[in-house]
Length: 228
Image (cartoon, rainbow, N blue to C red):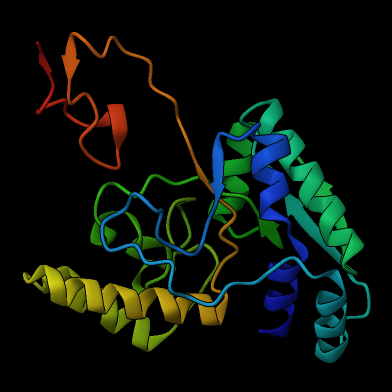
């Protein structure tokens, strides 16, 4: 836990959003994207603090062993992001070995857990039961896919919360359940949530109504869109 907390304190999310993504991103508060239903930002926040990160690493007994950081092969922006994260982690006491691979190799390595740290990029599919739970429930710890619980995180409380959230029909109760999920995951530092990415959509507002009606954006059905 101390090492994961050190990672969280080492990274400057504001710089990533402003410099690498040129403002088209927002620092993430936790495991739920801010557009995903039942998101809450009332969770613990890990501010950029290299001194605190170094102290946590010392408490954890880290001796400078190399840590492999596998970047994402999605273009120059992602390459710059990996470089900035490496720099920030190095400033906080980590010995980072930045690695890259083509898409097929990257997916194979992540699918088979051949990494120490790895970036991922996931859509949350409009509901936590569909797009969030798969990254954290223990039933999704299995090799063969890069888009499930490749981190190996296990917490029976989180498993139970996600199951209850998926079955609950009352929205208020779902909000309470998923708020507890988010608090628990953030306290455990189950992952490092860096950014909620923004995808600008340009359309003729005087002619098109409701082109975006959910967190999936233009990848949704356009079921509510209309020409006016």
